[in-house]
Length: 263
Length: 332
Image 1: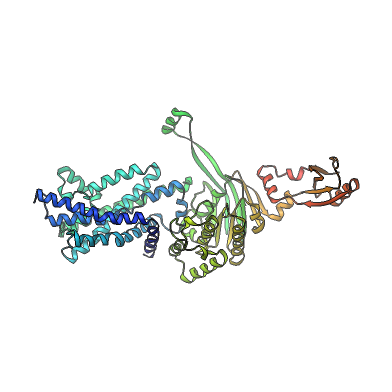
Image 2: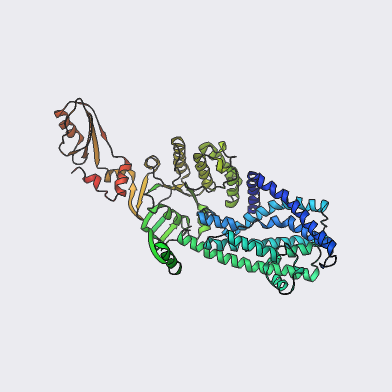
């Protein structure tokens, strides 16, 4: 745990260096939140009752999705790619740290940091200005946090796997672009999954991406309750286990390659 | 402390074919060639030694250090560091070693030096008392406090290397690998770093393997040198011994009163002639300087004379060039 905090502390310092980048991120979040709210309010005015949930629930879902999305841009993809390509991976391997754990600590430290400086302030703005509802009960709020953490971990491992693969293909930008597009779409980041028709809906329900946005947001907005909620949490856990094993196996192979060929 | 037996590391490289068709063919069926970077080397370093590890670029120095660090697996042979096989017990091994690679920093680029050190403290689980004690030592010996709040990217090269040195020693490693730790550093900073290396070896009994291209570093701090070339160790022994073994040649520099014609003295070769000055090379085991001087002074009046020892650098250069006998035989 101390290691996680140590990395979070590093992030405070690193962010202090890139202040403009930081403030742009902070400033753009409420604007996007406002945009999402405006979009759904307009749609509901045109076609009330067409989206399966109340307007309040939908606005909560959409506004919250923007408030938390910065937590998911903390993956190790670029870090891994850069370290391996430049050979700086040596200095990571020179530490008494398991690489996968190191990446998890690094990303999680950054996520903690972003919760404090971006997500929480954004949620306050949402609550006071943009009709973001509080969770219905304390228990719902707690389950939301659990689902959010699981979603974060699923996203982290997907990113870790991509980073690992990119060390072999040596191309990250196109991989990252394709991944982000797929992930955002199937995670319910833009459009909630319950609005997906037929086969698309089935596909979205099988893929791991729904763990990232859809599950925590649906729990928060009160769309997923009781058994359905527990099922969704179980689904997150299942994918997390699979991705965790895959991550460790893949990285094991890449690390073997690095230490046998010298990067 | 360190034991290497028949240690070998071969790299596999794809052989690139020439031209467009060639690169297309490479895509489908790659040919590999094997490059031996380290070729069957054996050595032993005992606790508390300070060994200079030298060799020309590409000789295999970094490859062997990486194997000792456990971040490179040997192709064959055996290596043991303080009882551990580095690549098999990499994480355990990293706790007992420290490493500085002069070419690239291991600190975080954007954050102040002290923050990197704090992170290392947490990663290595360094006790608070030890951390404070070491920090005081770094302040005294490396002047760390002068720049500890500066981000690494704003440090001068000399400061950066001092910071890297502090980071490598924070967890009190028993063994320190220094891979060109003074590259590109000015003379004053160099002297500081040299003294520091000397002190931690002497006072804390840290075993040190130092790679450098600067023979002054070697002469000032090392008691033993290993020379590696083309992946093989071509010399391993004390500095005094290498001087004895290869440094048979001495040079007598004579300054004459007047212009004198070039001449050769018995058992000495005229190497250089510049105005009134002449350089005579001789083998100190075959010719005594006094006979030589007597011979020369009997012919011409002289103003000044001096006997020069070969620079260690010159000895090493001859060894790199693969003709260590040259220095000894040249005068015959």
